[in-house]
Amino acid sequence: MKTIIYLVRHGETDWNAARRVQGHSDIDLNERGFLQARRLGEHLRGKPIHAVYSSDLSRARSTAAQIARHFFCEVVTDRSLRERCYGEWEGLTYEEVQARFAGRDESSCGIESFAKMQERAVRTMTELALRHPGESIVVVSHGGFINCFLHYVTGGRQGTGITKIDNTGYCVFQYCDQNWEVHRVNSTDHLPA
Image 1 (cartoon, rainbow, N blue to C red):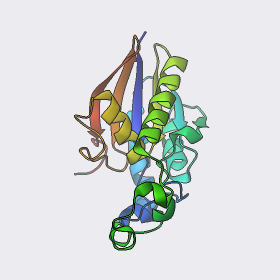
Image 2 (cartoon, rainbow, N blue to C red; image 1 turned 30 degrees about the vertical axis):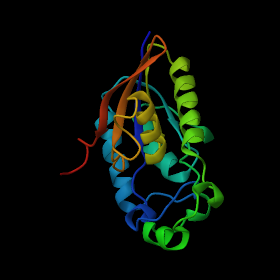
Image 3 (cartoon, rainbow, N blue to C red; image 1 turned 180 degrees about the vertical axis):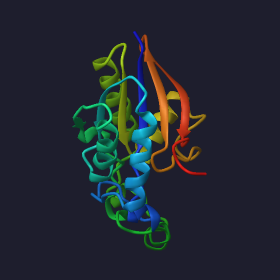
Image 4 (tube, helix red, strand yellow; image 1 turned 45 degrees about the horizontal axis):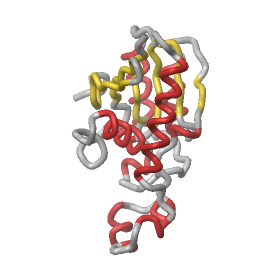
């Protein structure tokens, strides 16, 4: 039996707008982010969704709540769906990171390794797929998480360092017979052009 997963990036936050590294920092949606989340919920309303899961961070939970209300279900939070931990980089702009940490190894800054995050993403997504055979679910997570999973599914043709995932952009994955396929990447039909 196949499982369909709509893997969604959360809506915009003030830190997204300022290009600040968020990681595990708990920043909620800004006004634009709430609007994006509402539009996505309305866009997905006609889909046969059986459950909505979310990272436990506010920006993901708030996005998931705007989707779940259309399906009369509770949002189930899971810490394993969190963004990559960026340690000392969190709260800084990308320019500040380059100025302060140039030449330093990421691991010395308390950053979760790509391999660890990808292992976490694959394990968590597979567990959710196995929990919902023959069903469709929504999972709200973060850009880094989504891209590392996309990297795994496509064998590195898409994902981290290659693919941009917009705020409330979503990818559609199918899990069947222990195999993952991607059917759509960074869909933003619900957002104004």
